[in-house]
Length: 300
Image 1 (cartoon, rainbow, N blue to C red):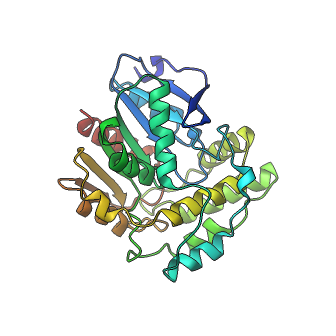
Image 2 (cartoon, rainbow, N blue to C red):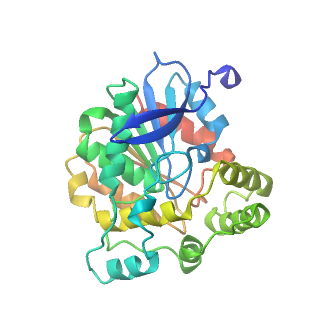
Image 3 (tube, helix red, strand yellow):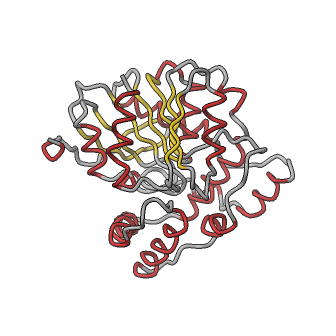
């Protein structure tokens, strides 16, 4: 039963020269499954029940705070990038400078596996986390048993951009008071969630409150965005990836249009593509059984 799955208290690991906060679900003797979250999202964005359900499929599930978010090391000494200016530079084909890149974040994830004594893991990433997972498969192929890239992209500049409404959410400052932050989250996910899965406002408020209470860090989100923009396209490098790859994407994603998932699957030889009708840029509980089944079939 998922409810009886062991869940560790959050711990801190030294990895790639920084501190990474993580927790685990399941037994360490089971195959490791590393979950990587997206832009500005803390590890608790991987819902605890989702992690328990995955661990119930006989995995040792690990979730963690990326650098610059949650309780992991912050890079405040690097300053705050002008996200809008970086987006404009990217659209004009100009080079983008950033304090670190997605490869550095992939090195963090590989370093966490080192700290935990794990030789290789099934790696599952969502949104920017999918980009980090892709970078792991490119630069640390021996650490990745299988790759699952969810609602993510290759970074190919020729792909369709976010919708205007989704881009506005990406760029607008989040409220600094708790109540305002929770209501802003509800408004944001009403745009980002897909039409096939109605937004559960109570769930969104609970999730947003959990993130707010752990600590928001919008400056880190800006640096993570800079890392995404500075890292460029992975499409050619993905052609060299040989680990079994599953790409999951919603056909109604306004933030990372479905073409990003199609491009990823096209780039990786032999990749499997699962397009989910009505799914936006979210993992609603109604989709968990299908997602977990797909991951478990793939991560063997």
